[in-house]
Image (cartoon, rainbow, N blue to C red):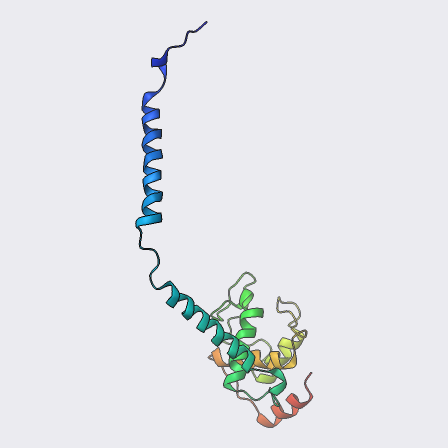
Length: 176
């Protein structure tokens, strides 16, 4: 049997433990009582609140019901389309619109349109999708949201196809 020998313990391990423990206590003290903390915390909070209120005002400003002719582009519809794009399209077409996401979606900025790049063609693509591709139908979105997406996509593309305004007006009045 072995006998107890107090000299057989690892004394350097004890010293390392005590040093680490002491350092931790000093570090906590320094952070808690000596560090100046975040300066202007009240200013940061008020700035964040102001930004939040501005975002709420902008989202409340736009009402789909107030749009009489959603097929006619406007700054408000483009901004609303950008929000819809971020919510529905970014996963495939990426934030910059250049595609190449997980399903190798079309580059909207280049705009090599498979179904045509006019407003009518883009609207039909959003409503029906493209069979045989990963472009799904977005018929579940409201008519105004689809038109807003069309206007946003046309605002970022380099390949803007000219719209025939009389055909667009006729189509827009009857589009669902």
